Amino acid sequence: KVEPDKCAPCILMPLGAHGWHETEIERMKEKVVESRKKIRNLETSVGSLQHQITQAQERRTRDVQASEAETKEASVRHGAMAASLERSQKSLERSQKTHQQAQLYIKELEVQRDEREKELASLRTAAKQTTAQGGQAAAKTQEEVAAL
Image (cartoon, rainbow, N blue to C red; front, side):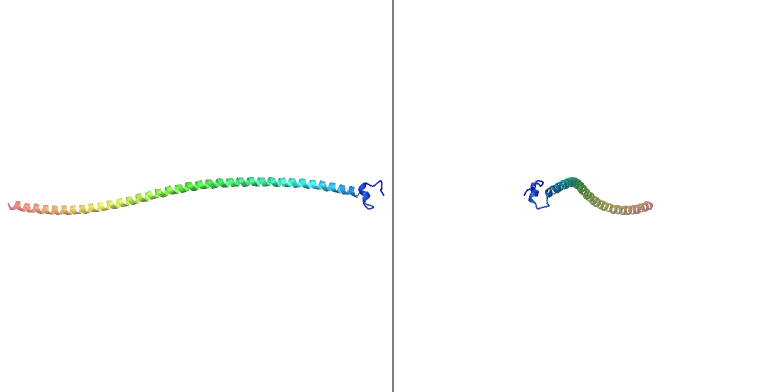
């Protein structure tokens, strides 16, 4: 039996269930609205997270570039210091060789001085002997002159 005031779905339902589908449709509409709000919130959240990720990636890229630049700069400084150290070591080696040569030259001059001092002492001794002999000869000559 068909009741004219009931819609088709309600006719199929047991007694007292008239209008259930309208309530269900309203509830589904509310769920759809809530789901759309959740979707919008999630899209906003995803967008925010994507923005944060992009910013973090940009920061990481800048940090990596800065780190690479610092590494290159440090490498250049290290190279410059190594070159400077090498030049200093070569200069030190030259100075040491010059110092050694100067010491050898000084020793050679000291040997020459000692030899000349010996020569001088020998000449002084010879001069004293000559002077003494000359004095003796002069005395002898004076004696001979006096004897005449």
